[in-house]
Amino acid sequence: MARFIEIPQSKVPAVGQRTLVHHEGSSIVLFNLDGSLHAIENSCPHSGASLFAGKLEGALLQCPAHGMRFDITRGCTGAQALELKRYPVTRDGDLYRINL
Ligand code: FES
Image 1 (cartoon, rainbow, N blue to C red):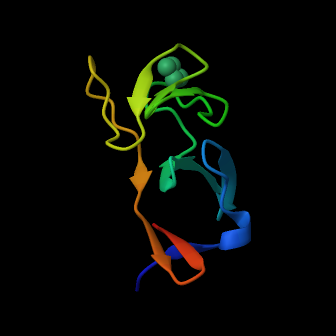
Image 2 (image 1 turned 135 degrees about the vertical axis):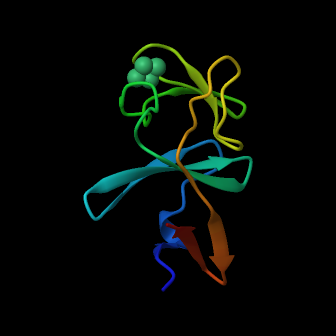
């Protein structure tokens, strides 16, 4: 059975903004990057810090704890093989779905 979180249009962050989505004990950061939505687990793969407050430059998100950078559109970093947990976001009419 497909699992997803429905996000109504009214809860979608504006372009350049982000929002935190809580679901079953975990949290997901939903970014609106130039009109394209990207969802990542709110946990840095380096040591688990919250990524919600990370500095975003283009698609590169800098972890506020130790400064590692992650590409929120691809999940990878340059130097180390640490992967963000990413969730596909799809649209069905006025609803967006974060697919778990
Ligand atoms: S916890 Fe994110 S870089 Fe260390």
